[in-house]
Image (cartoon, rainbow, N blue to C red; front, top):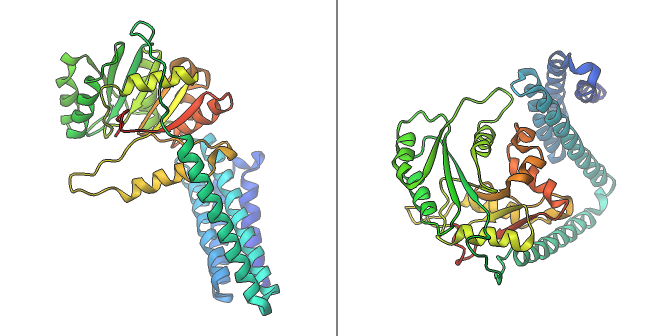
Length: 364
């Protein structure tokens, strides 16, 4: 058993060593050695001590090994790779430490197992109560407010609706039809064809040219950019509005939606607005369970306590000047949820809001 522990300790030491700047240049060799030692040690450990705690430790160890594979493969941009693997290593080691502590407690209190389960039950009740309080508070705070202020067409700022599209069909048509029907007076609509393989996407966009929709041809992103973020960056460069609304092709807007969004941002003096759309049933009359869980993740946890405000990529608006001030999309070239970074930065100055769409605002 001592040999198994030494193998696991050696793998951990190498994982930490590879993140030290002088050793980062040898990352592929060190990560490969850590991968081999860790895999052998994890397998031997679960064979030697087969129980639920060793199973949890090995399960987390598999994610650590996958983290080492990412370093060996080196498919990410170097800076992003180092940042991501460092944070992942820290998180996984922390979770393994919790499992080890629980294992030690179980062994120490083995004769009084009922006390352990009583503590688990009490902890579950406390967490459940905290989540009920959190979701109630969030639902109340995220309600779309009644708007007393009204702005004339002259007072309203210019707005660009930016839509990235890739291999789209009728969804893009329906989205553009809803945006074109908007009653907002100073509106620019631009659609980026994000290197679609199907010819139908650019054809759909050109069909709306007579309605003022501007077409942008996408380009293949550089290696240090995620394709979606690169498309966002191109759209932001082309946008001429004082505010930009980034909108997915599956979103539908009511005629008054854009005016309501801008009025809300002006009333609250916000530079960024995230929206939780109302869900509509699909063609088969069903709702998406996966999307519902995605909403749950944004609505339930007390995210603002950890400076992680809720965001969704479906439909969100940002002031052009604020976007440039936080570094634009170049600052989040490899970030999977780029709007989360902007929301965190703007929350520091109370310039971000997240609201649930209502029947009146009509974001679906």
